[in-house]
Length: 215
Length: 215
DNA sequence: CCCGATACTGGATATAATTCCACTGCTGAA
DNA sequence: TTCAGCAGTGGAATTATATCCAGTATCGGG
Image (tube, rainbow over the protein chains, first blue to last red):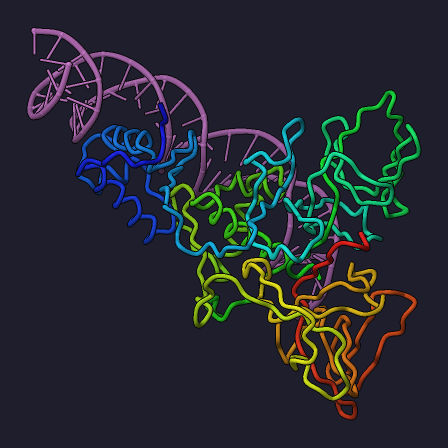
């Protein structure tokens, strides 16, 4: 059995609720709370709203984010747009220790970019923290366009994970000896021996985007 | 003094926050909480976010609905016309003496970019030549996203035209005295007196894109 | 020198909001 | 008849969130 799309029919009341959510979101800029839904619909119990939301979620037309206030998202059948060739890249912010880089929780935004802009193809944008790559023209707050890859060649800028920390450095390797080099004399190179240290390459840098007034 | 509309300039941090609110709203479907803003920005105190929100409200670019969770509304200046989907930006290469920057002959390529990427809106991409802005993280071959404007404020990176030459420098002005400052000690500042020297501002830098190779 | 603006940390508190539980009543299908 | 889905009431526990208060530090102007 599949839980999914083909749109079980909504009851009269349910589509009324769905429409209400859309309308309230439109006018206020954010989705309503259960209490607000109940008030608008004339319910005397917030739980009436809650039950409707559950039903809408089960029918796949609504997303409920557990624990988040106003955590409702109406599943739109894709709002037109969607010009064919563009890629939509997630912007990854602070990466929590131990969690995969591309976890939804790290996504700060999504930008559409022209695929021809970077080669090889960029898979995501990582917001760089700190000045350790300053002399490579990668500054604090910049977005590093990253191509996912578990291998790197000497001289490439890599996104590496060391003991649960994600870092951007220039990669250099000779046999088992790996160096992760900052491009800023104020920082120390990281020296690793692959026979004893664990190193995971998450991707290689293929571009930089700096937006805004940091300029 | 009145607090009102005409848009006091936002500080760098403030516009960063504003952009974050816009982006997170776009991604999740509802505005962030103070705690979420703090987390994304790296604050350890939710109050840091709160203070920024107050500042943004006072400057008239944000609405805060008291008591409502996620009660944030970014006041869109509704960019005349439609900020609709993608923009296609021309990449401008070497600019021939005496001809307008946007002349067709200078266009090397066109890239589609997400309008949300830069604020204010980028009008074209200029390929930077030379290392005179190295310490600002703008390297030879980088694309500078430029917002067309004939005025600039001190501290901004500008595209200026001096005696038929187009150059990228940091702008500083005190009365009639204008300095065009390189960000590289190997280059000399350019000092101008507006009473005798001609200076045309072609635009202000709002972003940088570096693709591939140098990395 | 003190002041206001900016940019934060850290802690406390009241309230906004989610979420669970126990019930009532209806309807249509097995 | 019994059961599942639908549509609600009412109350309460627990988080999530907004919001206040008291600090620290830096910066530029009067």
